Image (cartoon, rainbow, N blue to C red; front, side, top):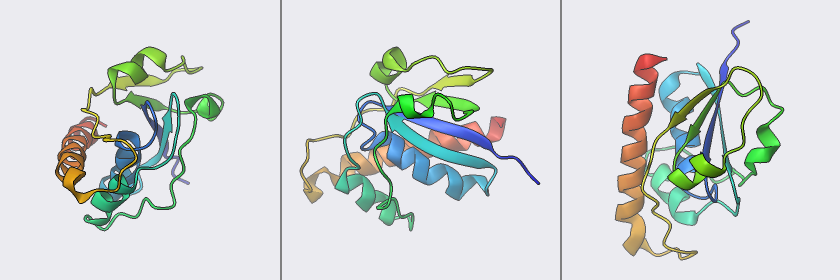
Length: 139
């Protein structure tokens, strides 16, 4: 039985960046990792994050917005914070946990489902994809 490393992506609201990252990692990693996402102040998954991931054939519409505190006892192997705020507010995880930080711009325009904001979400999705590609080369 192959044991997958558990990767937790953390941002502030767990609405956009971390949800996108949680969707991309399994698609690129060939089941090497279990991906999760959480926020320091979770809200809900942003509809534009769902749309830009759907453009790549990745369905995150079933994702939920979860609190990072809920993962403290889940034996996470790697925590990746996606904003400076999340890095500052992320609790310390027990055990030997690899901590990485990627400062990704926030595409959040508020709770609007306006296609005018899609280019910013696509840009963030592509930045996250680049970080994940680099991550996979070293893991």
